[in-house]
Length: 90
Image 1 (cartoon, helix red, strand yellow):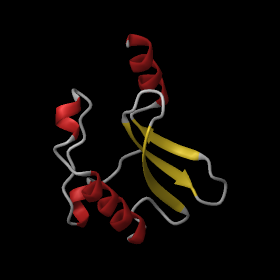
Image 2: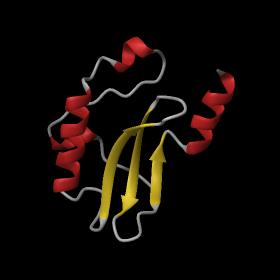
Image 3: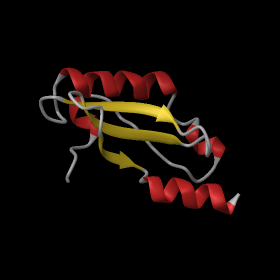
Image 4: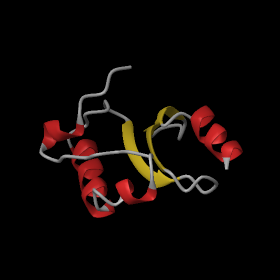
């Protein structure tokens, strides 16, 4: 699945998980605003919604594409396997 860059709707987002200091480069408000713009423009497709959250175990930012009718996660960045690996490496 190919996803257009968020800056196509007028917002720039830098997503990095290298260190806590790089996470602060883009305020959460800007990311949430970009997610709202993507959802309003239906860039993920009709009936799909982009969500932004923090994984409770790893505390890393997670972006998901969710089917609104079923609530199923269609795609996720970073993938679940990467999050679990990061948790194991702690």
